[in-house]
Length: 90
Image 1: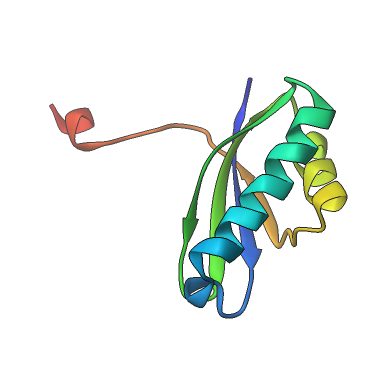
Image 2 (image 1 turned 90 degrees about the horizontal axis):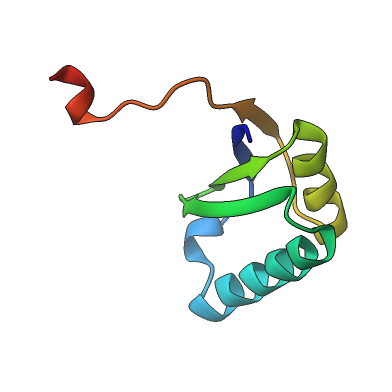
């Protein structure tokens, strides 16, 4: 399945408490459980005012549907075309 990076603008995201992040995570997992295995959350990166989420999904529409059901903002969805790391240089 394709991998996607979702950019979410959330002012003050970097100041969210551990309890806030746990609640957001629980909400996301609940929605994913309802939607089935065609969309999976891999991980998210929280910065000062944005959250970047990595998902594996059958298509972009499922990523957007997850966000809609969970009440999460979606400012941009980008399909990952390749993955590189330091070993790519070898």
